[in-house]
Image 1 (cartoon, rainbow, N blue to C red):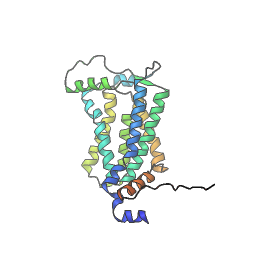
Image 2: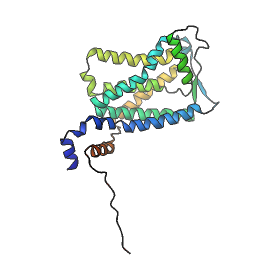
Image 3: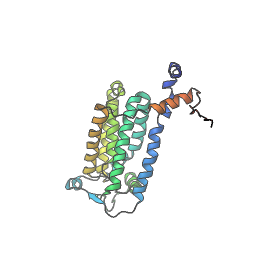
Image 4: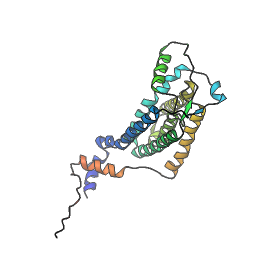
Length: 248
């Protein structure tokens, strides 16, 4: 009865409740960064170096540092768009990201990987090379398989493609979304952050997981978390366990 009255008041889909729906993913993101920071900072000497002749043939294009760095606003912007436009699609995206990123962490912990593709010297000096130098100082060429840049980008694109939002998009927006996604994936090899093996692994992981998430309906829906938020915003006190006293 309580939940019915809350839904009738329109609180169920209010902005505060949608914002609090982010917290499970935000908490996961904190633990992801903590785990990733530990394996990045650990001294290890048994890296599996990835690369191929194809990687050597791919040119170094410094301007692609811009789409590479745009991955961060890409994640934030489209994640929030899905949260407010199609919460079911957002839940699927959260499931997508958490499973894929956890797999990456496990692989990187057990089998540390690296690439040796970066140019020894950047011969040009411009805003792009300045950004690349800063990027290379912050991001080591280790723990690269599969590429999280590629996996997350492809997962977000798939989530939008399978959402109700995509049908409402105008053609220019669809083209912009596709071009942005492709440019981020290309940037990983064009600025020598990843090998083609990393990129292919990220794409294959996205395809495999999409089968389980969209066809097998493997989704973390966070129903209990939503119910908790609804009670809080409706001013309902938290449920307390009844204490049972037994007389001797």
